[in-house]
Amino acid sequence: YDKDNLAAEDWKGINIRIESQGPGRDKTSIQYFISEKIKDDFDIIFNDDGSGDAAELIAMREESKDSILVRLVHCKFSSEDEPGARISDIYELCGQAQKSIKWKHCGMASFIGHIKRRETQWQSVGHSRFIKGNSKDLIKLKKKARYSKIIFEILIVQPGLSKSKVSEDILQLLGGADLYLKKTADATFAVITSK
Image (cartoon, rainbow, N blue to C red; front, side, top):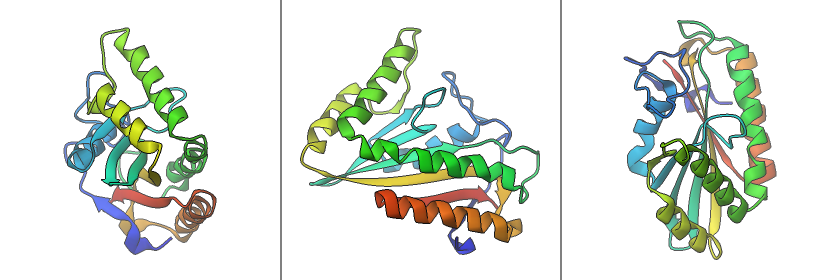
């Protein structure tokens, strides 16, 4: 994987050891930081975090009159307080990225059914998983999906990885994930790190 393609962020005010924002939207979490960063770029942002998730965040938008963009965002907390080049911090994320491709192959109706079920679970305890958009926006996209191309993107987020310290082993691991996603699902792959 080309080191220049790693998108390094400044994680000021974020606890890089806290992954999930939870129903209370913890503003010091990695997931909150990323949901805020991408908020203006999507019609729907959905917190799918938890057991059985497709990704920590699902972001969708109408890309054109005949295409829909779906971005699955996988976040992982850092194993240590300072960013470094720990392969263990990135290994699980690469696995999650590759596994999540099944959602492209199962079709949009099944994918949106998954989102609706997850939302119903949270609503039953007085919360919503929608960070942006709502069920009506989801139904609109589901109808559009019948005659649209689905563009898939996978984003992995690990502030425990330092771009400046990244090792050859980690770049090879990321390169393998990138190639797999392109070949099996024609999906694009991106990585957000620390500086």
